[in-house]
Image 1 (tube, helix red, strand yellow):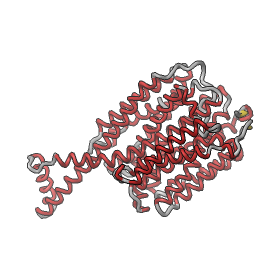
Image 2: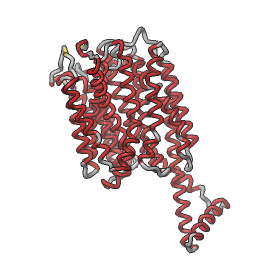
Image 3: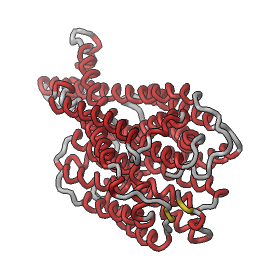
Image 4: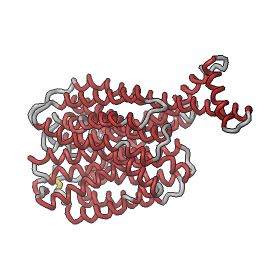
Length: 525
């Protein structure tokens, strides 16, 4: 428990602390997605395959997932201000090292370290903001934090695109340095640490729980990333990692349920609201980070857009989500049940995904995306704060912090899994769709002959001899098939995401009506 009364600030000090905390949370979340539009440039500069580059994203996410449940203990050991400042320093220094990486595995290693600092920023920032405001103002404090968490992932691609188009990929990491230095000194000057009535000794730390969690998450990520490339269970490495992931998960659950000081208190999952909310949080992370990952990838690989164009496309969605947050806060304060807002949000996200599935063609243009992404922004705005408050609404006392840490971890884990699954799915189904399309290209069919002859005449009209023109026509036809196969794969992904969101709607109905008001600290990690 903490003594939070003395942490409340007023006037300009509260403004500085709020801005510092939100800035740090934004830095962490933006860095989750800012690399999405830089992957092609990194590939050329570092000589890495797209599969290897996937680890630049997933290493950061894995580190986030591992550090989030440890943050409460670390804050108590070192003091919240000191821990927050140290996390900013780790994040800033590792950002510099990421920009100076000379090969892909150096970059992956520094991204992991950056994720360890970043995960702490996200969790601790929310606690600092909440405790800086008096109880009657904490609803607005959570709305401000929520805007950062939801808007952050969609700000990453346009910022990344700007630096890629005007500078080079290391600058997507260098931008963190001046902001990090400023936040570091502001934290030391203005942020206070609460007095903790109890501290855990080093001997009480759940080291085995941390090890088992890292085993489970790390091995599963390897399976998801490399499974398709290694032909799944035909590969000894995939088999070993699958067994390691299963054993890690089993031992982690056993450890957390039997140890006196678990790093993640799984016992709180006996609360049905939290159990259902955890599932919904995982899906929210999947949809939020997954869709933010796939849209820039589609526009760059299929439509040939620049990194900046791909990033700017997400701005309307980001602004819409930001505008939705205070509206949702007002609706919750007026007593609108969270489960209805969540159900509406999931339904809207399903409609967005279905609309995208129906709209995508090789000739889809920028104008087709605008209202589509506005709808996405509305759906995400309806989900974040209601899911968080709904998940924790029937918890009491210390269980609130345990439940909040668990939902934070699951949101990050959902995003990590979503990106890995989407990458694997696209790689696999590109080949399947291509094989299917090629099987229908019967050269004896009049339509195929007509298309081939038309392309041949086109190249002959440009001065090519018949044999050369015919070869160019066949290559053009092959490229057309490849592009169509890729579009079909992306369509499948959007439809799959939409179905997952739709299936979640009935689960929302399992949520009990909360008894009384939500505790002012429900969202404190």
